Every structure is written in structure tokens, then in C-alpha cells.
Length: 406
Image (spheres, rainbow, N blue to C red):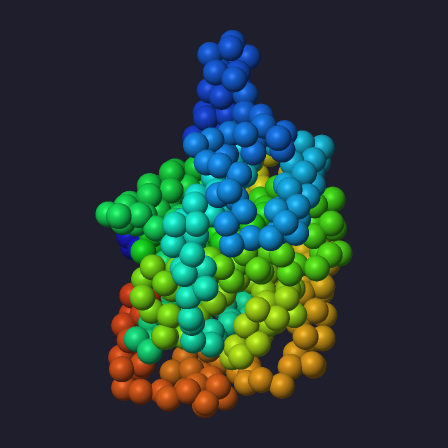
């Protein structure tokens, strides 16, 4: 058998609920350490998390550039999330460690950003060009569109490391931190790059910023937390996107590219578009469309991949039903938001993008009334060449395994 095919088969997981053996070894180590008292189990109570996450910071740091309403709403989100994690998620030891780390990180960053804004108040209000927002379901081609647009030197984009480590550093060690984060993630999930191609300093979605604001999207794809999802879906996402805007302006200010349109992309935007457009009413929109059944199958594969690492009690039937509901909800909310939108919109077909990416991107630029230059084409061609043959191309093999297992 040729070597390339052998490599691809080794990456394709035999069942959507398989996980790497190292996960069980880490879980046993943590459980043993907690049982024998070698180390305390991680707390998941809101007050204790705030106490630990705010260590070495002051109350004034949390309030910098934020209102009383911002603070109260974050505390409410924290309480609701912690309750759902403890009552519903059924996390194993790895999941509990992840939950503690992710939530504590969000709190630490919140205080650290407040300290930054207290010292440099102009960062949170940096002037920025109107962004270009890529919309679409998870697994619908938004990453390819995002990366092609981000490759254009006329635009700016968020680095993976800055999304998950938004507080600036001098010297900037965030690419190293991001690389270590990805190294550890790939150890626990060897199929990670078949789902989404990552790079520490590569253009990526702003999911880390939403996670730091405790938006549910970063957590519902890895934990079974239906009460927090329902709580979040039923309320105004405005407070989350107020924080998101501060982070975007801060990122633009520290890198000095506020004059170039930022290419923004997180599938959650499809669900929260009115709240996002309230912050950026002059945005240009790009909407990716893909067959809903293919989108659903790919989404289920991704979510099962994440959940099985952190829980020993994953219900595939529930995941299937939940993501049918989720896709329908996002479709309905996107349609309603677009019906009331009079700004520029470009529609992109997933299959057309795969067959003729250059033609589809030219049409996109024309719809948004943007110049498609020789520099744009050269940069996009280089991006396509870089991504060709990547690990993510074996995701189709995972979907076939998922179908056969089902």
C-alpha cells in the first residue's frame, strides 16, 4: 500500500467515539492523585474560581472599561455555567481539569485585560475599519473562506494565539504559548487537525474571545450542558459582544492594523448576528452555504470527538438530536437577521468554492464591492497551496466511519 494512503488511514478514527489511549492514562493519574490526597481536585464553584482567577489583581482591574451591568452579567453567566458543568456534564478527571483550566483562564484574562485598559485606556477604543464577517454553520466551509480573505494583505486577521491569549506581552511569547497549547491538544486528540487545521500564529476564528466572555459556543461543543445552552440562547447576547468589541479594538491597537478590515469568523455569529451587528453596523457579510445533511454529519463528528475526551458517558443519539436542533436554530436566526439587513452581503456555495475557489472569491469581492487585486490572488493562491494535502482532508474518512458506525 502506498505510504500516503497508509498515513491517511492511521489518522482516520475507527469510530466517532474513539479516543486516544493517553486520555485514559491521564484520567487514571488524576483520579489516583485526588483519591490519595497527592493533590486537591479542582474546584468548580464560582466564588472559588473568581478568588483564584483574580489573584494578584484588584477590583478596579475588573471594572476598567466596563459597567456595573457588565460585571453583574458576567457573574451570572459564570454561576449558570458552573452549575451546568457540575450538574449535567458528567466529566471525567480530564474533563474536570479542562473545565477548571478554561474557566479560571477566562477569569484571569478578564482581570488582566482590565488592568491593561486601566493603564492604557485608549486600547479598548482603538479606531478600526469596518470588519468583514464570515457567517455559516460549523463545518460549512467558513474556515476556507476566512483563511482566503485573511490571506489578502489588504485585510487583517486574528492569530490563534491572540484569540486564546489576548493580553499583549513584551516580548511576545504568545505564539510559543499557542504552540504549546496545540502540542498538548494534539497529544490528547491526534485527530485534531483533521477537524480544523491549526497553527499558533495562523489566522483563526475568535472563539477564544467568546470563551473568555463565557459565551456558550466554546463549551457546548465539548460538554453536555443543556441548561447553560438554553439559558444563553434565550437571552440577549449583547454583554458578550460588548466584551468582544473591546477585545477586537485592543487587538487592533496592539498590532497597529486597525486601518485594515478585520476578517471575523466564528460559527456562533450565525446565531447572534443582531447583537454582533449592533456593535459593527457598517460590517460587510459573507454567508457560506452547504448541504445541511453534510453539515450535520460533520458537526456531530466534531462534537463527539471533543466530548469523548472529557466524559466517559457520551450519548451519541443526544448529540445527533442536539445538533439537528442547533443547525435549525442558527439557520432560522440567520435568515431572520439577513431579512432586516440592508448592508452588503456575499453568498458563497460550499461546492462551488471547492470546484473553483478563484471564481467564487472573485464573485465574493464583487458582491462586497472590494477590489480583487493581483496581490489578493497571489496571496490566496499561496494559502491554497499551503493547505492542500493537509491533515484536514482525511476528515472525509472520519465521516465515512461515522456513517458506518451509525
